[in-house]
Length: 213
Image (cartoon, rainbow, N blue to C red; front, side, top):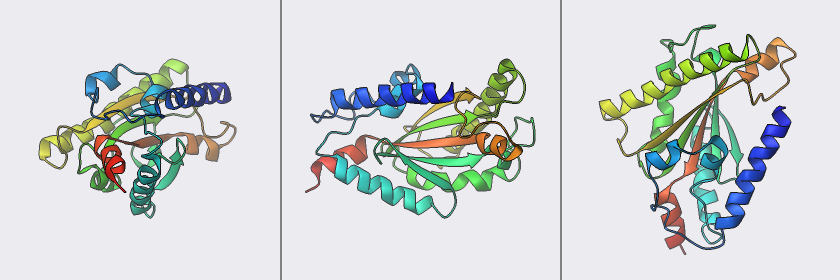
């Protein structure tokens, strides 16, 4: 089930990119919270689209940002290296079956704020995953409640002035739908319980890439 869903997501992302990536379009156009809140997960990962001319500079910027965090987190590159993902085990953020961030969570999440200082540099997508423990309803409720706690943490940083209110943070509760590994062992289930933070190139990175020589 996970493989089929992942393949479908990848096919949709690739189709969107192929459709739009040939010509440069203004990355600020339609760049709003309302636009992305109404999008499903896969289309969110595919937008804004990076044009062919901008790809090399965008990939360079993404790699530099990813490298700046690699000593603190597990990092993966996706979308042909145009997007990087920070993976944080939710066991490090929450007590078992709990939905409130622990006292250690602030220190674990704070380094993520550094690349977000320019609110137009990245669109941020938050995705909270569970393992297969409990019913589907339980997993959905758990991932939603944990997602709300993480999302509120970022909103509090906006209130404190650590982040601009212009930054776009789009939340998704994934439940157990997209495991990294089969839920056949304790270690695999631990791996599947995670927060993923997607750094998707925003208008300022794409514009800078367009204007670079």
